Length: 162
Image (tube, rainbow, N blue to C red):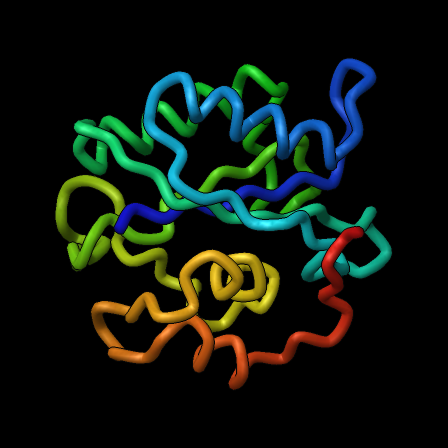
């Protein structure tokens, strides 16, 4: 199972964050097969809740690309929506994260993306949409399901957008 998270809290070229996330998944669908896409969720900005709230979602995809090539494709999609990498956790037009690539586990000292995403298990804004589309997915290190990780996380302020 290949899992992607998306988030946005800045507008771009007249598109609001909801539109950006939805269009980002359309763009992802042009380079992969979208199997499932979650609902949209609104979540408070972190670490500064005074920043605009985020719109978050998750998707399950299929692709023949390896993890490094897929991450490069995600970065290209981000750039197409005006993503500028400035300060860590700064507001952004689009953030696409490779959460998991099957059961692959790789560390920072290894070449390629760190997998699974290193902060995946602590982030309710990622876990809520992930648990919606893949509640039984198991973290390849902890063995916990997405649903169990979400239950243990602080989900205050995470709400599904109708």
